[in-house]
Image (cartoon, rainbow, N blue to C red; front, side, top):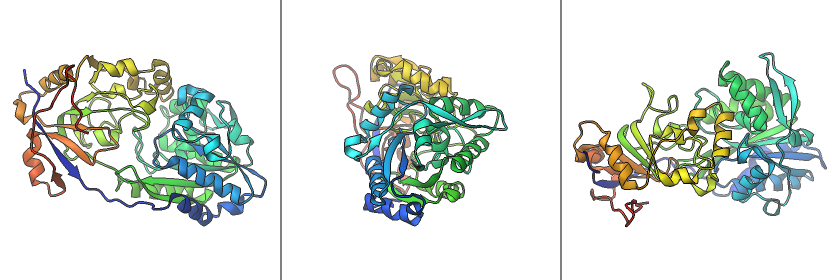
Length: 420
């Protein structure tokens, strides 16, 4: 049986554009997009707030609310997160609170409800739903991060358009649209629904958030409603140059400290681990190619939602104990991705799991098995790598080697002593 190899640490360097004054940038971009000219004094403005772990999100949403107040209009915050938060109004309010978004911190009302209205029935045969509270507001300001989607590829992936599709569609809309995507393309559905929302729900603008590989706000861009579709595609191209990547294109084992919805919609970002199109292996044109993934824990902020755990082959038993199966299953079934909730093989200790995972590495000797260890798929500027990757690391001018290979350490219960 193969043992567990020694590991060394490397540091990666990424482009690092960063907004220095978040609130000021929010105000500048909303004015640049002429959002203020589309809002009459005294009118209510529904501001969308999602469930992803977006950097500086409370400051950004507060900036939007303050901007609306500055033009003598009334901001209201709408949780726009599909079926997240257990698909309940209080659950979604709680998700926002965990990000520091409350009525007290924002200085305005939060209207949380799972009720929707049907805007129209699409020619493709499905209803287009929209959050009832947002519909009752005088106008809507759509706020969201633009980033690559974890399951779909195209000019439009995850961003303002998807917020109008899934986020504001709530649980009923999310379920219908994910079913429709089985018959039509994601691109077709997202464009159809977003165009309908913009036309019928008085969308006064969009605020797109871009992040760098260090989970920092790289830019904030205000967009006029009629330009959202074209500008979002341009911003996605820009963002793809900033997203983090693992330092090596192949590993037999990937150790992931934590999985969670605040890390990625799929728990682990499939654009990072190379499983965007197949839960079990990278597509032919996709990298990296990871043989086995071992997950050690869920994040506290995911509130038991283990959506994406089905992508891993192995996990620590604590992961199973941390799972809220009701929330997890609701999220995965609504998304049309039931396999994302399926449980991997679980083990009582890290050592027990790693011995099995490394034994699956074929005919490699212990010291030659390529493996990586990361905190999560958001934070990979520093990565622990097995000694089998030592020569490649030394030859890569983009990597800084921070330590020599050393044996992993375990505590009294045979769990890893964390290196992060």
